[in-house]
Length: 353
Image 1 (cartoon, rainbow, N blue to C red):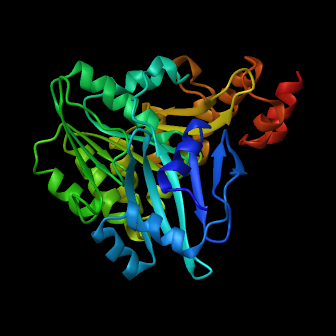
Image 2: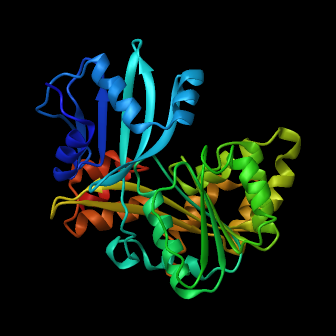
């Protein structure tokens, strides 16, 4: 007999899982410390999956799924956690991917992030991007930044998210959080209207398309501090991804705009720790100094890694240097370090030195 949905989630929660996967014809599975394992539970059937779907999805989300065969929403399991849920079809049947949304906002000092990232919360305006693969800790880093500003300033913060993950309580700042589907039809629409809502700081969950990206850059140009994410793995790649969104005839213009508005790019990847339970991030940090702005304007972004390498005194660091520090501090294993490096051969020689 299959368990109720919250009973399945309770088992995963007690195991410290970051993700739960429910697939018809398979046992429930969970990801713990990056490793996927099957749970010792009965195989899921179509009727059980339909019951789980009804328990999680609002009528609006059920209708959206009926139309598109995919839907994203959040679900709160009472006494456990909130989840970011994707429901989709596979082989003609329902399947769910559920990511645990941590409710406690971590402090900077507990995240093992470079101190320079905390300094970014003092910026009065401009665009700050936190990038990395899915599950690389981008949302956690941004939440810590928002929380730091909430404790320090008296400002108006608007977040546009899909879905709302960390829930903020207004402290010194007034914070509004809008969720895609529930509070807004699209990032583009919400961002366009946010500029009329007297914000000081805007968090855009993801710069997914050209229109959202253009509006985020415009918001940064007009005196707001804009925080957002991209699924890119390095600072140079991030700059190129933004520019490549634009038609060829507009790329020189956007290089000029981006060189003026971009303040920093933080690129993250997460590792399982070997010294204690948990995860630890390796972080590449690019700060937009005059030299970096000049490289962006002149389409010489391929030189950005060299600038990062020679600007460590300013707080910049390459991903591979960050990975090497984690290795030499005994936090991560050698194989994991080399596998995630930007230049594996070079890092392997460094670790062997």
